[in-house]
Amino acid sequence: MVWRPVIALLLLAPYLGEVLSTATSPLNLLVPWKYAMFAALYGSGALLCREVARRWGLGLPGLILLGMAYAVYEEALVDRYWFDPAYARDTGVGAYSEVWDTNLLLATHLTAFHTAVSICSSILIVTWLFPDYRDRSWIPARGLVVPAIAMLTVLFLTTETYVRPPRGPVFVAIGIGVLLVVAAFYTRRLPPLNRTPPARPRPRLLALVALVCAGTHFTLVYAVPAMGMPWPVGLVVTLIPLVVGALAVWRWITTGPFGHDSLWVVTGIIAFFIGLNAYAGLGGRYDLSIGALLLAAGLVWLHRRVKATDATSVG
Image (cartoon, rainbow, N blue to C red; front, side, top):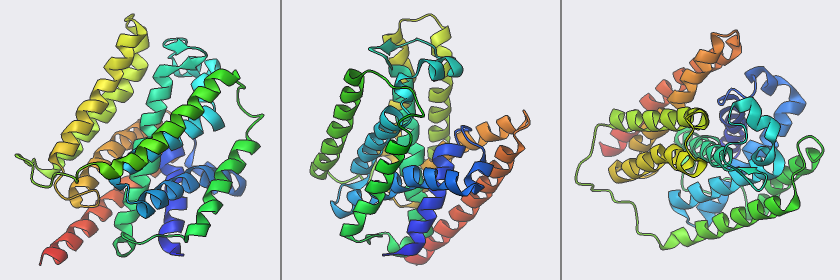
């Protein structure tokens, strides 16, 4: 077992997944039992997705689909915010796009967030932190049962904590999660990433595209319900920035999922939430502002490290 990246992932994933969205104070991660719960959910989920993608050669597309399956597990089965009218009201979305006790707008939004931030960003950042272990498994095959049990434990511990939806929508969510896992294994048939696109932008442009698309999607999710448009149209509108961003990034990245180009994409996504945390700090949540500053400093340091590593490998 490779301990350093595993420990780093167990520390980083709860912060990115739970704190960066402003849902939880960073100080909560200092409470042992609360951190244990977050690590068992976010950390174990990210570790399981990483190891499955690595062992079966699923690549970045497979990792993304596994991240989506994780998001379904967390938000539809553990927190059950897909089906919680009170949570929808608190966010300002209300009953907009509610179909069969499921708020489709929040379901897609939460899936996008956890896929991009909680899972993919956490895994990629830790991989850049420990490049020597990039092509190795971090835990033995039989060890995969440990994060799986940890995630299931969280499910059972929170059974009485959140809303209890009808069984029908829950079974549909389970089916969606299973289909995403199956689709992840089919990504092995996809052609490799195009490393010679017709036009390669500056790396900072990748970050800007990711920042704008993430910010636009986030803003539209909470603005569309007040615009009066039919929910199918509104739902499509909120997804357009994600599709545009994904296509642009996929077309322009030339260094693969672990190169400096990809780090700029992750930086752009996280930069939006760093700004969100800093803004929340203006309302008195100073712990979020401090955490945002520390995360920003960490990303600057990581960029310098990855750039130096790339320069050394080229030389």
